[in-house]
Length: 391
Image 1 (cartoon, helix red, strand yellow):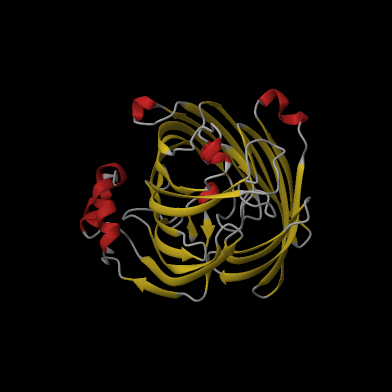
Image 2 (cartoon, helix red, strand yellow):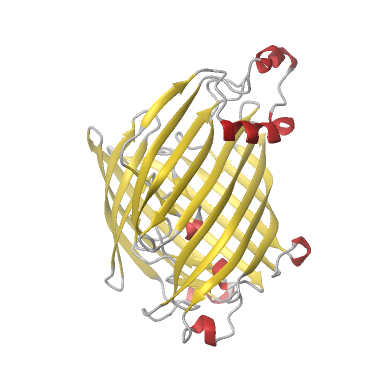
């Protein structure tokens, strides 16, 4: 899946064209080789009968895709660049197991944003171990509407840069259920903001930027029949995140996130649903607050339109293939934020909805080009041109 980053900092890529090269077993992609060498003690825990095969190379038959990218979201406007995707299985892995992936991308947008990233997903010992993460650097222009569930439609802009490091390690304790830990680091620096804006004139945690560094635990259950276009099954994920000055962070705060997606066939299509709950406590910088909006959370709202310490959100989308490579989608969402969990369900509920066109880019991997038009209760229209489904 060719996307930039995650959460509020993500900008998805639409594919102009793609070239796929089937690589020989002993092909050694330079950057991948470095990563595999670093992770070799943890990933290649193969049984003795596989040792001869491992001596021949790290990976089995693999594929490499290099492609230019173009995308559009309200947060970035038009953007473009290049990306590469290397898909493989470690030597000794079953061909029935999920393939590992390494991505590399660079993009530039009309908002003069720079998005560079190296995310990876690695499966070892026939999916017993799952490693994922991201190494990236971003220069981004944001809009800040204020804090809370009832903020004005006017916003101020600010510019920020940050390197990012995310590492996740999960182990399958029973079929489809993974438990593990993760680390997240963003060195957030606000390089420009409006002199008369709230971020300059008010006391808002995070207005000066600062390092985010913390550890957390993960519980992840995944029974989806396909990663990129599920037609059945579910994915349930619960994360904790403890950001601490002891780990170098400027702030002390905690985050608890529940994200549940469920898929089932309806007629000739599939109904996808997504429930999200997020709860934070402590001194939370404003850029880390739970938020509504963007290409994944209630399309139709600008990313960060509403943000606070607690959030609930429910989304649903009906997807159906119409003919050949073309499909349609109808989606909607509701949710709100609040300063405290005790008042979360007393706040105004915000609504977003829209229509989408799907164009199948990869028949085997079921990856779609996603063209969406989202509306919200305020009457705003937001177009999105991205790759892969929102949830």
